[in-house]
Every structure is written in C-alpha cells, then in structure tokens.
Image 1 (cartoon, one colour):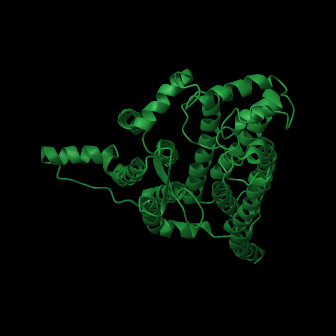
Image 2 (image 1 turned 180 degrees about the vertical axis):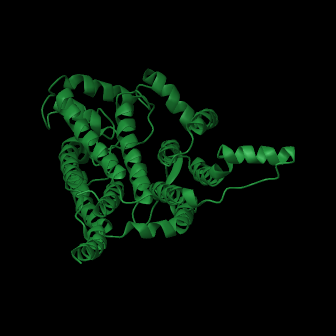
Length: 404
C-alpha cells in the first residue's frame, strides 16, 4: 500500500517539476554578468564616436549608443523571461511554418521600400526598426533540424527491389543515410540561396556551422561530414570568387595595407589597439584608438577596445566568462529531458560560440572581415534582444531538466 502511494506521488510530482522547475541559475547569472560588462565596454568604446558624430547619427550625445543599448537590454531581459516560461515542446510542431516565415522575411529585403542597402549588400529590413531577418532564419534552421532529428528513430526506412542493380544501389544509399539527408540538404540550400541574393557571407557560414553541429549531435555518420566539408569548402570558394565584395575582403585580409585608408583601415587600427593594450591595458575609458582612429569601435571591433583598455588579462577573463556560459549550455544539452530540447541547445550554443570565436578572429585578423558582431557587447539593439531570446529558450529547456 505504501509502495503504491509513493508511486502515485512520484507520478503526480513529475509533470509539475518538469513544467514549473527553476531555470538554470549559473547560466542565467553568466548571461546577466556578460550583458552588464558589455554595456560598460560599449559606453567606453562608443562615447567619442557619438560625441564627434561625424555621420550625423547621434546628435552629439556621448551616451547615445549606451542609452539605446541599455533600453534594448531591459527589453531583451523581458523577452528572455517570457521565452523562459514557454513550453518549448510546442515549437516542434511549428518548425515548418517558422521556416516558411523566415524565408519570406529574408526575401522581403529585396522588396523596394522595405530593404536597406549598405556596403553593397541588402540584408536589412527597415521596419519596425532596422534589423536582419537572417537572425530569424538561424532560429528557424535550429528548430527545423532539431524537430526532425528528434524523430529520427520514427523514420520509415526505404526499401527497393533487391533483384535489380538500381534497386540494390538504392538500398545501399539508404543504408549510408543518403535519403535521410535530402530534406536537411534542401533546407540549408534554400537558406544559403536566399543569403546569396543579399549577399551575406557571414550568415551563410553561420548557417552551415549550425546545420553541421545539430546533424553531428543527432547521430549522422561522420563520413558525411568529410564529404559535406569538401562540398561546402568548394562551394564557398566559388561563392567568394564570384562575389566581388567577398573577394575584396579576402584580399584585404591577406594584406590590409593594400588599402590602408579605406577597407584595410579597420584591421590595421584593430591590431594597433590590441598591441597598445599590452598585458594589463591602458585603463578602462583610457583607450585612444576609439577617438576616430578605429572606425565603428562600438560595433564589430569593440573587442579591440577591450584589449586596449583591459589588456590581455582583462580580455582573457571576458573570454573565460564566455567559455563558462558556452560549456554550461552544452551541459544543459546533455541533461535535457528530451532529444528535441537537447538538439536546440546544441544549435543555439554552437551559434553563440562561433560568433564569439569568429569576432575575436576578425579583430585579430585571423579571419577576413565578415561582419559578425560580438554577442552582448557590440552595438545593435535588435541583435541583443534576439540573443537574449535565444538564451531564454535555453533557460526554458533547463526548466524541464530532470537533473536538479
């Protein structure tokens, strides 16, 4: 009798624990800490640009970028809270509608009056504020891949006539997983095709990285990654050679001094800022490269200002905090209650980790300039809100984590 009572009690408590559990505190605190540090560094990096206002954007208000980012940070944390309260399982059934919506938004940038063009690329929508619909495309890709791979065991295997050579070849392709990969290849091809129209090389690379990470975590054979890597590498090479702005970026990456007062100015001044910082930096707020030497120091190259003002030690500590957040995210993926939640965290944290790595690589001239911002640090209100929404989704999955 006592045994049956305990069993009923466990059954009664289990759904309540899964739906109303607490968010993962270490992950949340690391997110809050990094956003706060990012706001402090943004204020330091942006006030000279905002004060001089060479491009007539800020009205000579030195707090323009900081105030705007702080407002979006508050909005972002509200979104994080709301997203963390949702039942993420319902997203699996909305994977295809979300994907279709993302494709429509990515096409909308080409509609006259809706899209905004800068630097030879049309990748922004003007309304309700200026933002990149490719960010929605990344989330759509994560949800679609995760939902489909979560039901991988339910897939009906194809069988062909074993008596014919064509049938035997078809059975061979089924055994190695060729037919299983067709929907994923089709989806990523559509995404990459839409990004090519903008064009948007950095988002293209991020899409491929996300797809590869989720497929790998989903159990796809390693052999396909070798073949896919060769195919993607070849396609990316052709894409770069066929797109003038991408080709010029690669050439300037190899030698920024080809255009030291133009497109090579950012990497050159970035390296000077990093070198000036030394071991402990010149002091918070005391950097010099942000005084109109390094273009747009509040955006993609904000980490160069971090290195200049906080030095190698300060920059390493910030990267250590990012590493802790990423590792904690993957830990949550390992302990998620279901495969769908686990794969979504893998996709989100891989995207986040790649953005951090790629931004640092660009700032140090290890990679060509790709337009990948530093999460939580670079100016960009809508990007910050989307990043915090992604963190909220991770927290929503952690609520139903069976591990306490």
